[in-house]
Length: 581
Image 1 (tube, rainbow, N blue to C red):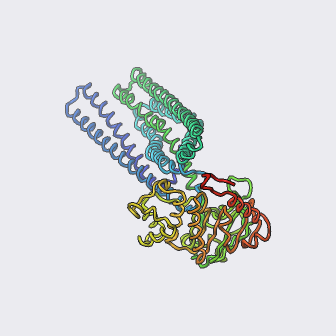
Image 2 (image 1 turned 135 degrees about the vertical axis):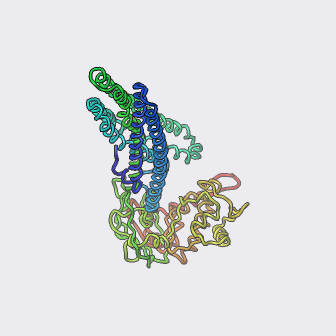
Image 3 (image 1 turned 60 degrees about the vertical axis):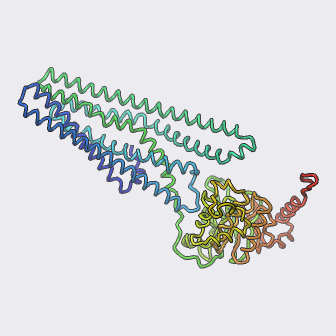
């Protein structure tokens, strides 16, 4: 089983496979030498020849054994180097691919699946390259070499053994169609179980709060059971294929041995040569038998490699080389549809974001607000229409040049499991401690400096700070490297009133000097915007300033008044200790 796509991934490492095959062939020749030396020694003892002849045979045996030992060690070292180099290069390719995709998604591959592909999947490919491929090529050549050696002793036995050899690959092919389906399901179930497990672990707090942990525990049990069943099918298939190959190998060797005995008894075939044929008969089948044993390695490797090829096959966004000389963003008649959706998410969107202006994008959940952000940042590519920076399409410019002008702060901005200082250094490696502390003070977050100051470590998933503190910290990190365009995508969602007020105060301050695009579920936050776009069902229904939109008495006005009514309709009373209308 040779997969052309996976073979191409080897690059310059292909040479090591051929080195290994060459050494394996040399090892076969030394094995033949060992067998010939043993038969020669028996012949000398049988014929009572001079001792000097036995010494020659012993010397030949010693050379063959030492040579075989050296070949075995050398083969192992080259396989090890092949495996290490392949793993390093393929992981490097995968990592560079992820980097080249930038903010784009990795197709249908989820984070857990991506980790499995780049870690365990590459390990499976290592076995495919270092174990299966050399054995495959060696298995094709070894029977031919043995036939050439033995044909001068007995063409009948050699021909029978050579004809029996193809029965092993035929048996492999017979189960390969079924095996491909099984291994494809096996890899899919494995990745799916990993995705579900990660999802449950990350959402464990919510599952406990809503008492849904039992339900999801059962779901995990079901997925584990599915994986167990598919694993059993894989093991059954491997056991069945191994049994079939053993039967073929033993029967083929038995036929060759039986024919050899017949020729020794009924013809003039020398018994010592007959012994050599009997001992060497097994060698005809061992290479293909080993290949069959490595078949499941190949299937695992190919299955993992397909997922890796899927990742590497995602088209890169081709950015240009021009430098951004204008920060005016124009969305011109843009429509967009997600690959797994049957309908358009955005329909004929036209927007302008002027330099130094504060622009708000609002609307009900699911109306396409965040999709617009993903198009502006290059995470997704428009289906129809174009996005212009200045007067040129976005991908005309260098990605580094464009990203040096723009920053995105969202409710899901990632804070790394590292010190506070190092999280700031990611954004600006030249920032001083004083500048970091000043940025932290701007968002009223001095509390997180208690203890070791900037050496305090933010836990994984920011579990040691609140949601509001996390989003304020994300804002502070972006403040220490000023950009010309700030995009805030629901940066004030799911946080307390105090944090929201602090973040909005900083956003309004930023809007005095920089371009700001604010996406918010709360319309009160965009009241001061120079322009507001109101979306519904992927279309712009209304646009203008807050005052202009309120005068229209349209959907924006209705939503704004509804929100104000809800916000003002509930007051907290200390006396009663509860919310009252």
